Image 1 (tube, rainbow, N blue to C red):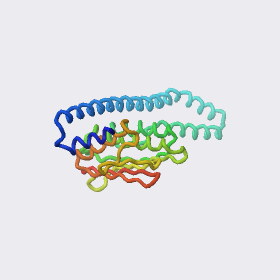
Image 2 (cartoon, rainbow, N blue to C red):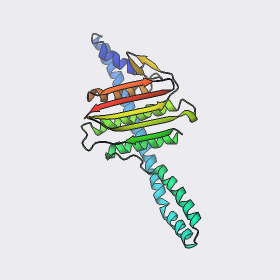
Image 3 (cartoon, rainbow, N blue to C red):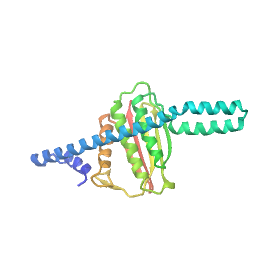
Image 4 (cartoon, rainbow, N blue to C red):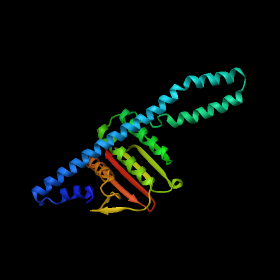
Amino acid sequence: MDQYIILLLIAAVPGALAGTRLYVRHLVERQIARYQDDLTRRHCEEVDNLYRQTRGWRHDFKNHLQTMQAYLEMGQTKQLGSYLRELTDDYNSVDIQIRTGNAMVDAILNSKLSVVKARDIRVDATAALPPELPVSEVDLSVMIGNLLDNAMEACLKVPQEERFLRFYMAKVRDNLYIYVMNAADGAYRKGFGKYLSTKGTDSHGYGLYRIDKVVKKYRGYLNRQDEGNVFATEILLPL
């Protein structure tokens, strides 16, 4: 049975046998612990990947300066202009594109988006955070990480030319508004009025659970909608 359904059953059936509930809860907690360990490992790998790219570019920076100096001394301004454009494109591919003012959120956003782009998924992302944030950085990072993981998994199920992911986060009135839209293959599962993992007992179900848990913790609003080959998630967290 899908672990996400088990979590819902635990909460929805208070009259279940105590022994069975304890066993199921222990099983689910072990699964969640493994999921959290895997999530942490993957996030570290993603940040390391971004760091390696940036470090590699900085390592080559001296060579770039020498090349540009040579073009300048030889009066080859056309070649210098072409080299600068190519260098700018290369820099933009590894530079931290999203700056919200929050270091932890920036790390999770940029590391995830770098992986998304590496999967040949078109990305349109905009993010900003208010100076004072009553939401825990850890909770917000966990939620954003799971949103982007789920969106990327869905995109990978469709042909490359159809893949896209849009991410928007900003303060709207007295709320933190988060919106994610992505390509999907149109195969969805629902249970108890909620979307469920389409891959059975994999970590995708835990991702949905973690998102729901954070939204509930801050008494926020969560809306998931699908329109054929497009899936969207909308979240409001009161500020």
